[in-house]
Image (tube, rainbow, N blue to C red; front, side, top):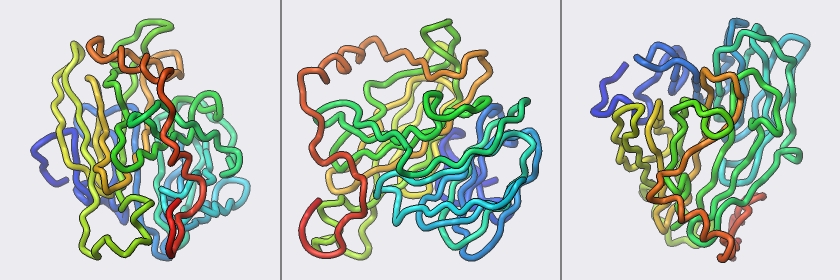
Length: 307
């Protein structure tokens, strides 16, 4: 494993292992409840055992086929993570899977002690939420949240932050258990960045452009953490505790992240506490309109015009 200046932030490829571009699991010191795998399949098949792990297979770009107990499921996927939701496949603990195809794929993981049935959630059935207002507007795909998916531990969603906007804002935490108010959840952020949708077909973006965003974490009573990083496609930030946010999209680049959460508490719930100094920001959303660019639900045009 490559050394990094920040034990909770990894550049693309730092965590490469066994054919996967990145693997987060319990081999990382002090990491216990969540995992993620990222790969460009390129026609290969990657095998994951039927152990005490529940999973969600998520096409990032292109399609894939998942072989599992009881058959095979084709996930049609999408052109890119910025083109709306994708269909996903949940498999419970004890179900081995083989992921094959030509696309780019993520597999969210969590240790689990109970077996739940495989479930195929189609793209058209994924709840798409436009959250926030003004420059705080972002788009959330809630395919792996408690209201959508019956899972043992996993809470998974993906977020699109259009160019110039902020998400994971106000900064918040979920690192202590307060029944009905806050749950302890490890969290993984997997990032991608791309030229803004309005610029992709304009001809003004050079081939050597370097899409990026920024991501911040800072300490809470639960522990010390300090991430202040430029994030690019393939980068991964881990949040074991502490406040996290904002995730900031540069004015010329859209930002995406996949969130994987799970924790030790009896409640499978995303319950958070805002930084008290920033909590007032959430109250301003009621008096401001959401960003009219959202939702992104179809591919951007390939020539001319803006979406």
